[in-house]
Image (cartoon, rainbow, N blue to C red; front, side):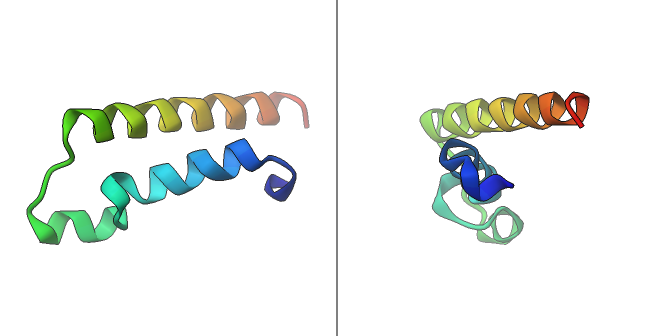
Amino acid sequence: MIINYPEVQKWLTEVENPNSQNFINMRYCGLEPDDESYKRWLKAYRSLKGWLQKQATQL
């Protein structure tokens, strides 16, 4: 259960809300994330993806 993994919850929040806004709304606002925001999002994405792949192999 993801509730037991605060770090994973943090990654998921970052992936869902890059640049501190919902990822779906980003396409309508016309603002692109700066390099630092993108790097933070990419790190969270890769971490979350790795964690999910690890979970899939342990089921």
